[in-house]
Amino acid sequence: MHRLPYFKDLTTLPQLCQQLVETTLAENYHLLYRLIQLMLTLPVSIATTERAFSCMRIIKNRLRSTIADEFLADCIILHIKREFANNIDNEEII
Image (cartoon, rainbow, N blue to C red; front, side, top):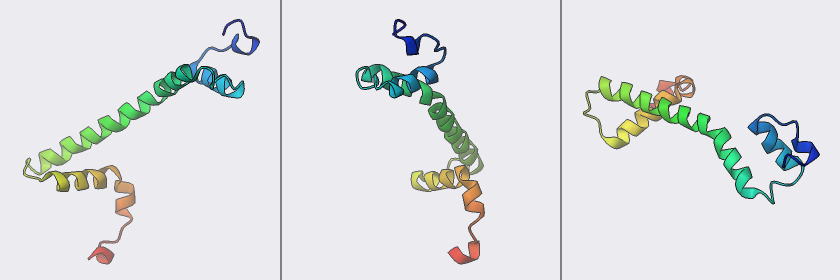
């Protein structure tokens, strides 16, 4: 790829991925393109998972581990999406 003129000045993976799409070489190098996509999304995936486990640890400790799995999952979702949950009126739910 270094021999091709539009790949010479690339220094980052996002640039390489974008150039593959623009030159339609992503179809020919589909495994390379997929690998780059996975590498670029990995940090986001890890952060989301760590945040969920952190929430689970907080909720489990507060309830002293006497919580059922389904109720725990519901509590974790509400904790993670608390900005949305805070906008819900409790009187409407009741």
